[in-house]
Image (cartoon, rainbow, N blue to C red; front, side, top):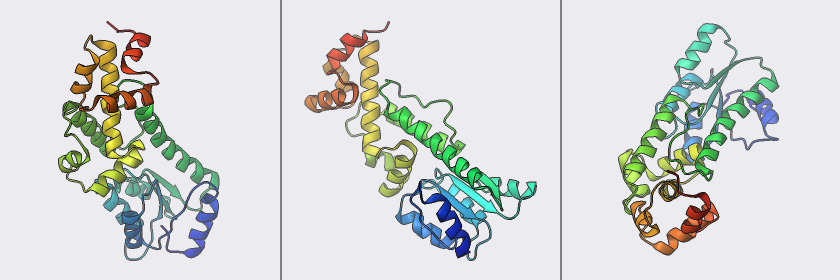
Length: 250
């Protein structure tokens, strides 16, 4: 987000070989854009008309539906006081102008990599439903994900656990929850719930002597063929085969 077209052109030239770029001249335009298009990361100047970069950052970081989006502030004001002002607003990075192209690219890559690692954690074939310790996420996002994982684990045996249940629990609209989870985990709410159900089933197969029927009921599946199909798709084995191959862990 940048009110000077020449600077926006420069930033676009730096980034458009690797990323899809959307532009806004000020904070209000940016909010309209963010409401309509899922953003992976925001780069904003401080000095903008109508709503400046600090106000935009503060507003987004205090809105549950958007606080997960990494926010980089660019500013000609490079003093320590100005840096602290940016971080107080919730910025994930503050880069003083004039900046080195490499510096900006590295900061963007590192912020996006931390999200990718989180995606990989939730999409890997382990059977842990726990949130990884070091995620590089802001505290608000860690808290949101921790509460989300706890809530799903608490109600995992209930077939009624679905996206609507989560929307009500977090007082978020369908689109807000979808956007937030898609960026943080790479999954839709329905995929996220199914993923944790399957991880829980795999964990029970390896740590208990419960039969497969008991396990799929305990993890909220009410259709055995669906459970078998999704489990095999994820773990490459049918449930009983998975137990035989991995062995029950005492």
